[in-house]
Image 1 (cartoon, rainbow, N blue to C red):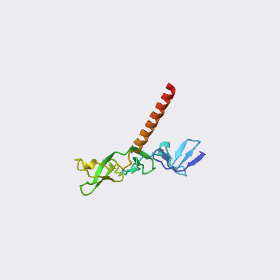
Image 2: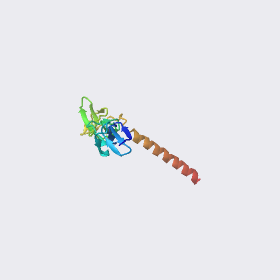
Image 3: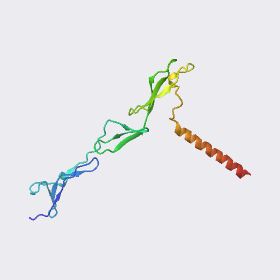
Image 4: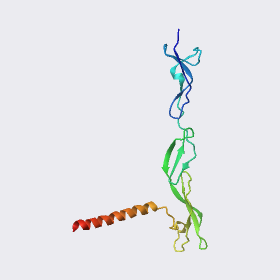
Length: 163
């Protein structure tokens, strides 16, 4: 029998897509072969290399706002979430010296810069008295500014309409 052969090169599977082995296919008899001499017939299913699926590291990647995991094969990012911070005392405040504490994400371990704890003899819980020079709430201040400006414009507009 005369064959009309097409060689198919090997294609590696990725995390999400199947690949294939190197094989030869006859367009006349619709048969698959694993060798160039066409002596070992295989099925189409035998040519498939199954997709690997993602394999995520245990390591967390992070920036100032989020943490995530990366597939160690293709680099895709998943499990992206906002940090879940809690305060860690680095050095307690005493009457003689100020202390230090920082926020640390309980999920990924990302640490913010330490802030000063100012000793306050009138407060029993000195560890929660933070130096307010810390700018962590800038977004809240910006929102409050815009709400205030909007309110002022609304009042002025209402007064002009009433006249």
